[in-house]
Image (cartoon, rainbow, N blue to C red; front, side):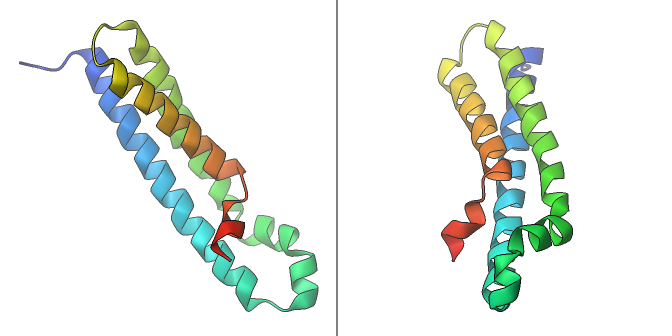
Length: 107
């Protein structure tokens, strides 16, 4: 039995969300390592350093946003209700992790 187009969108959505979450976590661990490494004066202005050195982290929001859009598009089909809501939650978590300063939890 071949999966329908909506099911393929759902699978792509979950994969993109997980990819975004893993990538964001890796970047946040690197930011936390850098924060621990720097001295007091640099810590005071670490937001600027973070934006300058790790500004590429915000590009990871694109797969998360695409994932959320794909999961919302797959809502119209019948069946797999739990997977659809799970994909939506994963997409939202992926976006929150990108724009939240999660690296502070790793210190």
